[in-house]
Image (tube, rainbow, N blue to C red; front, side, top):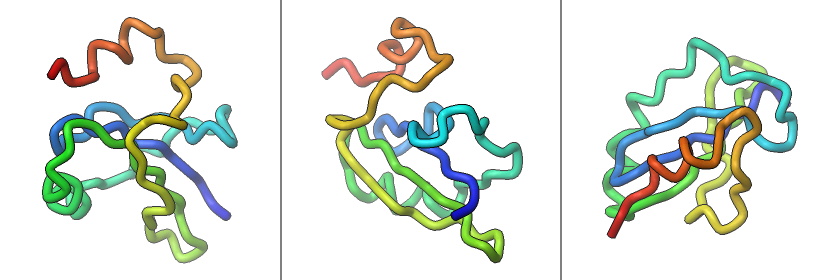
Length: 90
């Protein structure tokens, strides 16, 4: 499998892109375009989700996981207070 990333969404907007926790030392690529994913995530109408993506051999990004954050550990390199400020306050 190619590169993997975890994206952090608040109210349908991507607020953070981090390395996936399985290969935590692989930084997110600069060319990740989430434009097509925005409507789908916003359509879920959820206050917070994480979405994991993996790059296929042909270079296309594919969603491989979506969750409500229960199993999403704090990303390496992101301070706890920085992650907390992203979360919805409802």
